[in-house]
Image (tube, rainbow, N blue to C red; front, side, top):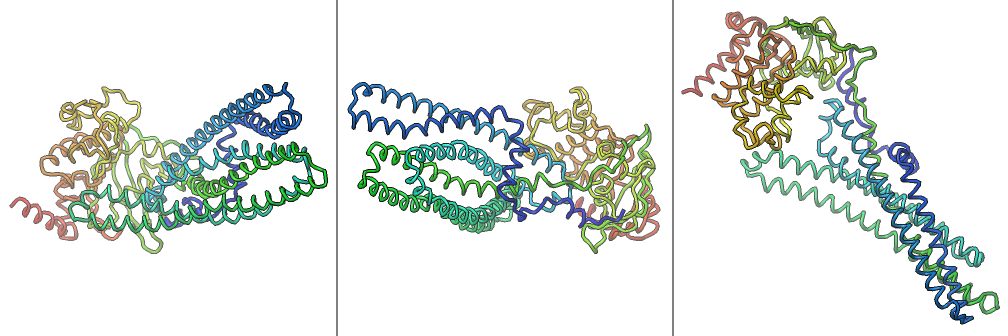
Length: 605
């Protein structure tokens, strides 16, 4: 297997947002994927819209009757009937429009929630390389802001088609029925209006796409400022970060003002064309009237129908910019949904089986590069017996963390193979592979849930007794019980309500609950003070018992008892042996240990 990481990222990356899909594709896909399952609600909404539009189309006829019977014929029998008919007609119209809008909004909200579920699932399952290639705030922006834009396109788009277009059709039918010649004069305006809306919409779609990208950049700035708040405060970077945010806000404002101008141009453009229509209609109607071909009640009804029809035309012109923004947003949303990870189960992959007392790990001539032309590890061979404690040491950038990434199949090797109890990690399912490995990192990752929930992530579904037993073994039970709500206390964003040592012990409890045969410790104590390190080391000693343990060591004093130490430099294993053997060799390890020993002595002075 010789697939480079660059090709993996290219294959895993989502389809570029620049690959614009047309309105027809977006609408068809939205209906196919997210509306089709709501057909009863959708059909009921359309039925309400048809009723409401029919009621709207009856208004010109009511005007005709009112002028004829109340003002021309002065029929007293109609004096109460026609106003009553108006009340009934408008009540039916209002009720139908309310029902239609409510149900369509419901369909739209459910559709976007489903799309957001798909986005989150795709993001959560994406390869580490693909996630690292995009700032996390871009995903947040797409998940929230772009999805909202897409929702507006769905709800307002369907409402426009269902209400505005149907009402326009009803008014047009009434106009044709009353005077087809006058109707032809009025309809002359539609082609130029459609052309103008297409021009405005295309320009707006481009501007909207830029504004969405800039919103993601702004979200990234805010996220980085909050995530790095300690450094911002410590180095007095408030002004720098504010200046950076202001620059992005100014850029985004410039784009948003373009969007405002294009969106605002839609209705005035329609009104200008409408003015020509009204003028032409009045001219032709006046001509007919002078020649005795048009009665006042018929003209009044036609004029009412035409003026009523202008409102749907204006509303449809306002809709086009919304749809254009929605299409741009949908392209970004579907780009996330359409992305596929490359690190997946191989065809015919089977569940990994690790027998009791097993967990032997072997790297055979493994090669890997994060970037083409720059190998991170080259021809690495490691032999780690089951139940052994093995340490990886070496200067920064030597490839130690890459070993963990490859063993967990966060990335696939470019060459060689990795075996666990003789099973190639590429030939087993990802779930079974990772279920047999527990990872404890230097910066314990906790989620803003309860302490118990964070521990339970090691083995979802574990009993409360098992969770508390793991906490006791990790020397965490004592401080947990002193918290306001004990195990049910929320730990805050990133576990900030806990100290570094407490977070680390919760992470160890999580690993203990996982009870995996292979344990990976990535600099698990390097960031702790002496007392916290002592407590964590005691917990780690219990965790490592009877497990295959691979340790990335920053402080070499923590791995003196390792069964074997592999010394790495520039992606290669340059030395291996026990601590005593490596000291005797006087090589890189001896120099690193001497440097580490000197630093420890200086700290204790």
